[in-house]
Length: 362
Image 1: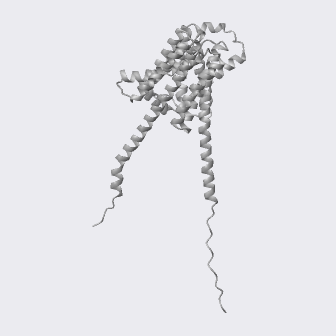
Image 2: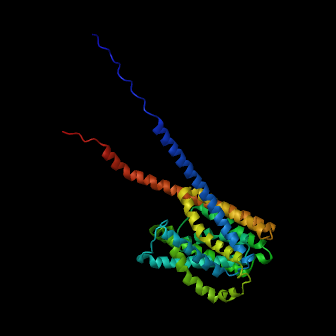
């Protein structure tokens, strides 16, 4: 009886489904990340521009002309919003380390002074002028670093300081009536000075402490420690006594508006953190420039600021100077990163070559 010959079974083709699923998951993940990057930038611009404009509206439209008290309210409301984040486990709880308490105290003092002084200035100046003066921060930083620390900068940095100085001067010359006061200019100059000192002397400390504690805990303790500075200040300048005469203290809408403004202070810090996490440094730089321009030009319409040709010229020069300066700083950072990466490769190369050699047995 002849035996039947059985042909060997054909090999099954591997299913393409796992590969397709992996590609789909990767595509979905990429889309989600891109969506978060777009959302974070829009969120930052909305919060940053809205915070300044709504703060001015609190002073002007709601007639809450108590800048130091509003600064303190922002600290209290932000901390109250953080407590549930700790309670639900969304954010981790941590406290400042003992060896960094002194440094954290200095950061707190400069932050409180800078915030309150700039709010006092915003109460007395137009938003356009206040934002133009705020853009002079790089001028103060570069001057301090050159004179005090002896740090030399790229020549183009000094060129960028020209429009950052000339622009605000044009804005001052072009401001009229109630959009400018001498006291407001003094407050703003001191506020920018405090911010510059913090950048020059304490930026590394701020990053170190924030890294140890996390953004949420850092923000909570910073706001909490600012209260013993802001409360006596509000008593000393008479705001605590004057606020009893506030005409809208019985209005729930007015109080709701003030609480919203206060919450936006904490949201601004969170929005910056989101952009840093999901977007690039270049995107953050472009967002800052766009935010400043949007804030200034929206404020001209909302608050009916007297827009003289000199004011418009000053705004344009300031924004152009700010864009030029941030572009230079961004390029410097990218070059430093590339240099550090190249140096690391050079240091590792001999080790990799040695490991790559084959040892022959005798």
